[in-house]
Image (cartoon, rainbow over all chains, first blue to last red; front, side, top):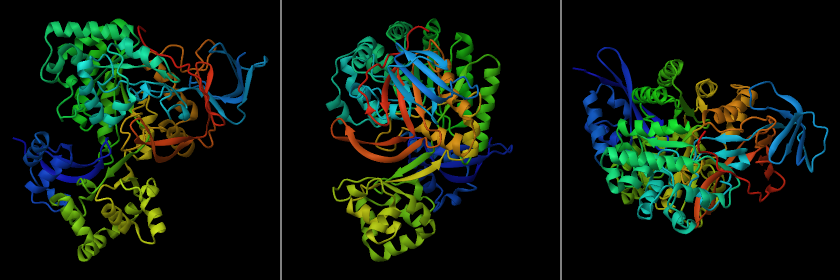
Amino acid sequence: MSTATIIAANLAAAHEGDAELIVNLRYSNGGVTQVPLDRYASEALMTACAAQTPDDLIGQGWEKVRDALKISYSR
Amino acid sequence: MDLVIRNGKIVDGSGLPAFVGDLAIDQGRIARVGNVSESGLTEIDAGGKVVSPGFIDPHTHFDAQLLWDGAAKPAIEHGVTTIVPGNCSLSLAPLKADHRMKLVGMFNQIEEMPLKAFEQGVEWNWETFEEFVTRIKEDLTINVAPLVGHSVLRLWVMGNESMHRTATADETQQMQALLRECLDAGAIGLSTSFVDMDETLQPVPSRYADIVELDALCDVLAEYNRILQVVHEFYDDDLTVARIDQLADLSRKHKITTTLSPLFVSNDNYAGVDQVMDRIEEQNATGARVWPQVQTRPIDISFCFAVPSLLFIRLSSWYAIMRFGTPETIMAAFRDETQRKQLIADATSMMPLWQSLVLRQVKTEANQQFVGKTLSEIADLRGTDALNVMIDLSLEEELDAHFLAADMGHNNDDKVGSLLQHPNVMIGASDGGAHILSFSTYGDTGYLLGRFVRDNEALSIEHAIKKITADTADIWAIPERGLLKPGYIADVTIFDPQTIDRGPEYYVQDVPGDGHRYVRDSVGVETVIINGAVAFSREQGYTGEHRGEIIGGRA
């Protein structure tokens, strides 16, 4: 079972001219990946993690990112 | 000779070193390159200027605009002589009358083409691809190499079912037959998308296709030696790599060229683009033809306070009022002296960003005068600072003031420059004619030749010109264009290498239905010749020549 956690969250510019949040995840085997979150997913993630700023997301588990993406996809 | 260009610095598109010489054009074709002793009916002195093949823009969405503007303005002014519309699974044909409003909705959602522009600028007098091509040929200045969209093929054959399921074997065969019809009528290939959403935020029809359907359509592309264009999952490197593998399989199996667009350099993940390019190199080394398209210009971020923007995510006081507020509470916070003072105090450390923001769009007549100016410039005019201007304008416009933060992504010159010069990269993805209310999609070639050739020297001028002319023509199987070579069709751009650039972005009302869009003028482009005739010159502007051609069909 993977135990990937957020190690960084940064603002980025998306193709369509919107801002998006890029979340970096590190897996238990050391691998790192990035997940771009749109506004809706970012808001859902910040709420789920009770985060005031993106730095508050560091250390949170990947499941919260997955759930935030689900909320964005199903809006 | 009809036309002789003298004493230019000839950059012929081959990649070979530039040389000073003449170029003669007769009956629409290049007659001689080098020393031309005959005189021309028209002569152009190109001393100090570069004479190159006309630029080819392989990723545009000028489909609708071509119905009211056969020059695809301002593309030609920037030196572009051939455009490829119909990207990303969306073309305006083939299209049954019953499906017109569905397609208009998709164009509106994905490309920001206003509904009013379709209502007032489009006479719907076609259904088939051939009828569409005949319609736009009536008044064509620029050359058009049109893709046919996978989503519209599905819509034609499957109707509303195209937005819900995979195709049956019979429907797939019908799509194959329809694609053949389109290619016979002049299409240059097929476009599909694995990413885009329609106006109801549901996947576009092409996303419901399975690999069997795509494979069958590639069979038809193979018959015509034509290209497959794909919008891949550009926001995710792992999915991009998987898509590259799939395209490589299709390319090898059917012996076709494929291209995916767009590929960006993420400032937070330089390794990601390296990973993607490693896979491209690996696949192409084993016989595949998979070309990622990379745009030259940086990405901007647009926002208004009516919609919460992540641009403010690191300013918790601002983000909180945007995220949890309503328009009324946001305006109340801006009006409240104490809250306003606190917001300004929290954001002052980022003053250079606020100063550089450009006012994009307002609804009141009184503030139209400020559109296109930076907040710093407006602040000077109003005797205040940029932050207060941003708040004041938002209040005056009831939060419907739109701002743009320029140069926020895909803006590391070293990384983008090294990608642009990569032998496996196609320079493209301008999106010309799309996103017209968000940002300008014109002038990428001027930006390439100014920023990456003259200023940063990431590419030589010979290399850059080759990549936007002969290479593009080769990849897209466009015959007899892309080189300054005797016998080739005379698409020629003359520009000043010391000044070529894209001009500043501005807002203009020139879209049917009193619509607006963002455009950029060209800088340094002197003369543009299309099919042997001067289509645009700095002195004359557009000359009224309508010699544009449809490029496509069986290669």
